[in-house]
Amino acid sequence: MEYLALPRARRVEGAVRVPPSKSATNRALVLAAISGRPVEIVRPLESGDTNALLQCLRAMGARVGAAPEGFSLGGPLCGNPSEEIALDAAESGTAARFLAALAAVTPGRFRLDGSARLRERPMAELIEALRRAGAEIRCLGKEGFLPLSITGSALRPSAPVVVDAERSSQFFSALLLAGAAVEGGLAVRPAGGVASRPYVEATIETLTAFGHTVRREADGIAVFRGRSETSRYEVPGDDSSAVPILAAVGVVGGRVAALGIRAGSRAADVRALTVLEQMGIAFEPLPDGVGASYGGGPLRPVRVEAADFPDSVPVLAALAALAEGESRFDGIGHLRYKESDRLASLVALVAAAGGTARAEAAALVVVGGISRGALAILPTCGDHRVAMAAALVAIARGDCLIENPDCVAKSYPDFFRDLTARLRF
Image (cartoon, rainbow, N blue to C red; front, side, top):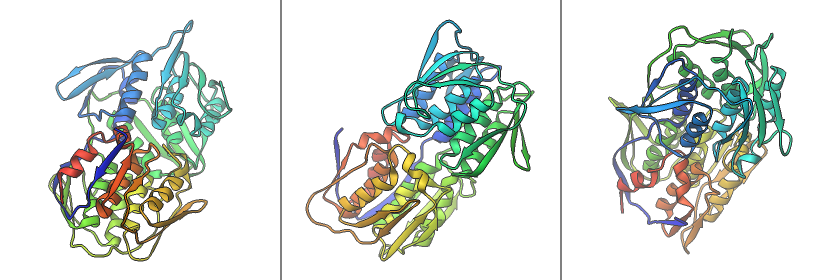
């Protein structure tokens, strides 16, 4: 579908069961693939990103079978020393980073590649960290980017692996996950700050759920393969996908529930709910989710440090365009390296809707107030999170066409169906 038309809505009502977590599914796929026995993955997310990772793990030797509530997946992984195995991460930055580290600790020869946009997304910090640990990796194009030629082996680094994770926490998480496959374990230390630190905590939680040992040290984290691995892992609901559903009440008023998530979760994007509260939306914990309500009227502008919940910034920016006053989101320079340059994409989105926004080196400033008039074409830049933000702008403004709406399939294939089913026009 090239464009999707959404009319102006009056209210949002009802409940939506959010999809399984993309983040948790991807981490579970890697850990199941290096498990000594099949692991049943219960209610995994089926999306463009998770499917790309699963197919690459199949190519590396993972065995996939049927299971009542999902599928089973198990190792061992092993390449072919006489034949290079092609790994196509498609559009998935998560898959590319996780696979680079995993291929480096798996005997065999691998060629890791992806889409044109994925070839533009940074990998240098992870590549350098793996090389320092003894991995053999060649960049087949521009240094520090895909495609990569990786000759995997049983790494035995004698010192902690130091990685610069200021542009992406996935560099740190990739090493931690691969550490569960390293004999004798792996210690990982950040060179400085870590972008989106809660995602590293999510990696640690998943490692622990799979039975591996995680030891926090003064200057880093050490991972050791567990002696008693799990045989079943249930994927939690996706907090990132719940945020745009809950935020929709702030656009047109109403009450909505996002089912399958927990209000007290430590997941990164749950923190975005605090920002939505500051804007005027009320939340309440439910037995199986979180409820949100808003009586209507102008939203309040905000000024927040948003480094820890980057996936929610597009939705927060969409609401900021409807608020009275100027909002500012700081600490988000790493959003330039996502599925799109999200700072530039959000400036373009707000401008197309008749509003004003500007990007700074590591911040986004949005001036509340969008104009209504002629038909607006809302760009998504092929970015699933920007497309979800565009949906909120569209139902507030009316007379909008959302460009390339199908890009939401990367994380939430049924997003537009679930949202529009709860709208009242």
